[in-house]
Length: 182
Image (cartoon, rainbow, N blue to C red; front, side, top):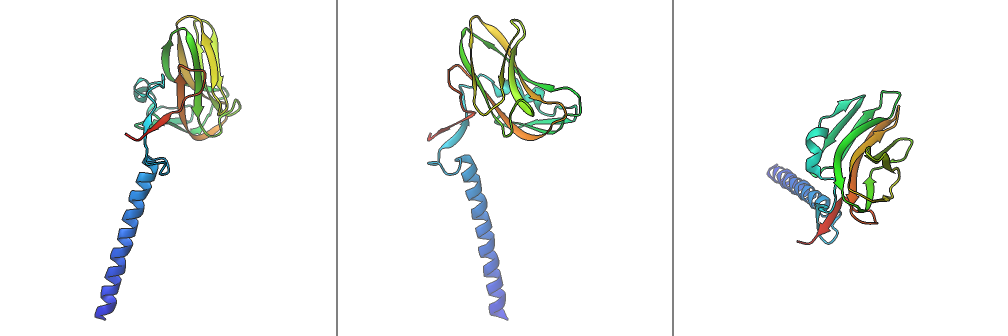
């Protein structure tokens, strides 16, 4: 009897150690993007859509059957169903841009012009840029302008996805996260 009890305790201890190790490895895997050279994932500082400009206004948004949450990094999660007969535009933030070339992009599963997409609107000059694919849209600004960034959920669409909007001063799409060895 004594040996069976010790064996059960030993196996229980080993099981707990395995679970703790698996949890730690899972956390390291997420932080290092799947153990890619153990690089640390950081929010891209070149992204002109600054998290501080939208986290307080978007987090907790609940309208038209849609719920928005924003994590600490600025990833926007939208769930629910657009209960209206119109597309719902969820304002992310406004960005003032100088004359130059920019690329707007967004990492979001299922993004297209029939479900949900990202758009930037300069209402003063009646111009807009729409990102409805995994590729970015490059556009040129001739004079300083303020663009308002929206996530648009089409009428009647059900959604459960995350958005990682990126606007960079470049002719190629930027990344939401960058990785460093620092």
